[in-house]
Length: 81
Length: 157
Image 1 (cartoon, rainbow over the protein chains, first blue to last red):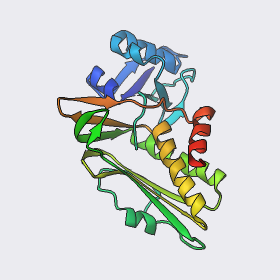
Image 2 (image 1 turned 90 degrees about the vertical axis):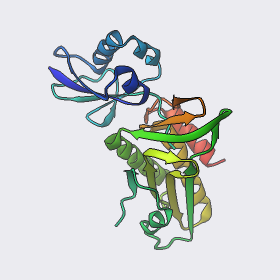
Image 3 (image 1 turned 45 degrees about the vertical axis):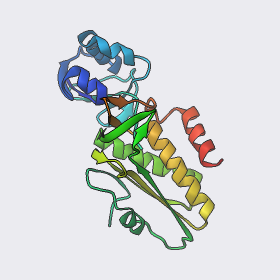
């Protein structure tokens, strides 16, 4: 299956793009998608403990299953206000 | 009618924000503006650029309004956050809290700004004299009960 990955702030700078299309095996969860990105962009590993995620623009968990066509967003620590 | 929770690139208008609130039975409105400060951690700040994951950021603001209503049922909240480039002294966030009495209006607006900093997917890119840096604050997790308790504690202090 194919998912859309959304990246923001420093993650977007590291990857050089805010939106990526990536393949994921059937039954994959959000963490599997993240792990694929960490091997692609080693600097992402610094965010292992501080990252959070969203699936289809709703707050989610790394254990959540992903489906074909999902939009998976990875959120570095936020700094609004 | 102006929406109560908004992410916008336009300059914020806090008077319009107050007008968006239903003030029937209201005796107090507290308005909070967060401004771009000219310094941060000893650096001279030149300007900021804010970025958001917009659909989730609006959802996060809506969640804060819902949480505030649970704690202060008579409070009406409006929260607008600006994104894009902002110069020193410009408002990046505006919060209006209307309530029958002042204590709840002050508390709810303080709660809202603390929660924005905890859970709303917005990021600040600071351009300072000599460089630039993405500011990284809290891990955005609305289900983190400890963080929510901390925001409530600060709001009610």
